[in-house]
Length: 105
Image (tube, rainbow, N blue to C red; front, side, top):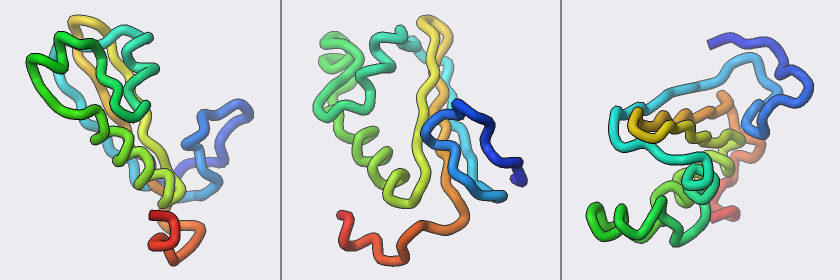
Protein backbone atom coordinates (compact mmCIF):
# COMPACT_ATOMS: atom_id res chain seq x y z
CA UNK A 1 0.00 0.00 0.00
CA UNK A 2 1.37 3.41 -0.90
CA UNK A 3 0.13 6.27 1.22
CA UNK A 4 0.98 9.96 1.55
CA UNK A 5 2.47 11.49 4.68
CA UNK A 6 0.06 11.33 7.63
CA UNK A 7 -2.11 14.43 8.08
CA UNK A 8 -1.76 16.65 11.16
CA UNK A 9 -3.40 15.04 14.18
CA UNK A 10 -3.03 11.53 12.73
CA UNK A 11 -3.18 8.61 15.20
CA UNK A 12 0.04 7.47 16.88
CA UNK A 13 0.41 4.49 14.51
CA UNK A 14 0.78 6.79 11.51
CA UNK A 15 4.47 6.40 10.78
CA UNK A 16 6.32 8.60 8.28
CA UNK A 17 6.88 6.12 5.47
CA UNK A 18 5.60 5.62 1.98
CA UNK A 19 4.87 1.91 2.34
CA UNK A 20 3.17 0.02 5.14
CA UNK A 21 1.82 -3.43 5.82
CA UNK A 22 -1.75 -3.07 7.01
CA UNK A 23 -4.08 -5.92 7.83
CA UNK A 24 -7.44 -6.14 9.56
CA UNK A 25 -9.07 -8.92 11.50
CA UNK A 26 -12.83 -8.57 11.97
CA UNK A 27 -15.49 -10.62 13.67
CA UNK A 28 -19.24 -10.47 14.06
CA UNK A 29 -19.15 -11.36 17.76
CA UNK A 30 -20.65 -9.59 20.76
CA UNK A 31 -18.66 -6.39 20.24
CA UNK A 32 -17.50 -3.98 22.95
CA UNK A 33 -18.36 -0.56 24.29
CA UNK A 34 -15.89 2.34 23.96
CA UNK A 35 -14.97 1.94 27.64
CA UNK A 36 -14.16 -1.73 27.10
CA UNK A 37 -12.04 -0.97 24.03
CA UNK A 38 -10.12 1.64 26.05
CA UNK A 39 -9.02 -1.10 28.50
CA UNK A 40 -8.08 -3.74 25.92
CA UNK A 41 -4.38 -2.98 25.80
CA UNK A 42 -3.89 -2.76 29.57
CA UNK A 43 -2.08 -5.75 31.11
CA UNK A 44 -4.32 -8.30 32.85
CA UNK A 45 -7.46 -6.44 31.76
CA UNK A 46 -10.42 -7.93 29.93
CA UNK A 47 -13.64 -6.48 28.59
CA UNK A 48 -15.67 -7.64 31.60
CA UNK A 49 -15.72 -10.42 34.19
CA UNK A 50 -18.44 -12.44 32.47
CA UNK A 51 -16.28 -12.57 29.33
CA UNK A 52 -13.34 -13.82 31.39
CA UNK A 53 -15.44 -16.59 32.90
CA UNK A 54 -16.89 -17.65 29.55
CA UNK A 55 -13.80 -17.41 27.31
CA UNK A 56 -10.88 -17.52 29.77
CA UNK A 57 -7.49 -15.93 29.23
CA UNK A 58 -5.24 -13.62 31.21
CA UNK A 59 -5.63 -10.40 29.28
CA UNK A 60 -2.06 -10.39 27.96
CA UNK A 61 -2.37 -11.42 24.30
CA UNK A 62 -3.25 -7.99 22.97
CA UNK A 63 -0.72 -6.28 25.25
CA UNK A 64 2.06 -8.51 23.91
CA UNK A 65 0.87 -8.11 20.32
CA UNK A 66 0.78 -4.33 20.60
CA UNK A 67 4.24 -4.17 22.17
CA UNK A 68 5.69 -6.32 19.38
CA UNK A 69 4.10 -4.08 16.75
CA UNK A 70 5.39 -0.94 18.49
CA UNK A 71 8.89 -2.41 18.68
CA UNK A 72 8.73 -2.70 14.89
CA UNK A 73 7.56 0.93 14.56
CA UNK A 74 3.85 0.15 14.11
CA UNK A 75 0.76 -0.33 16.25
CA UNK A 76 -2.58 -2.11 16.63
CA UNK A 77 -5.86 -0.28 16.97
CA UNK A 78 -9.23 -1.72 17.93
CA UNK A 79 -12.67 -0.61 16.82
CA UNK A 80 -15.86 -2.17 18.06
CA UNK A 81 -19.57 -1.70 18.42
CA UNK A 82 -21.73 -3.68 20.85
CA UNK A 83 -23.75 -6.43 19.10
CA UNK A 84 -21.88 -5.88 15.80
CA UNK A 85 -18.38 -7.20 16.42
CA UNK A 86 -14.87 -5.83 16.45
CA UNK A 87 -12.06 -4.98 14.03
CA UNK A 88 -8.38 -5.01 14.93
CA UNK A 89 -6.04 -3.26 12.51
CA UNK A 90 -2.28 -3.82 12.50
CA UNK A 91 0.01 -1.21 10.94
CA UNK A 92 3.67 -2.04 10.30
CA UNK A 93 6.25 0.04 8.42
CA UNK A 94 8.45 -1.72 5.86
CA UNK A 95 11.55 -1.36 8.05
CA UNK A 96 12.15 -1.01 11.76
CA UNK A 97 13.99 1.96 13.23
CA UNK A 98 16.59 -0.40 14.70
CA UNK A 99 17.73 -3.71 13.29
CA UNK A 100 18.42 -5.02 16.83
CA UNK A 101 15.04 -5.67 18.44
CA UNK A 102 16.46 -8.17 20.94
CA UNK A 103 17.55 -5.35 23.27
CA UNK A 104 13.91 -4.17 23.52
CA UNK A 105 12.42 -7.51 24.55
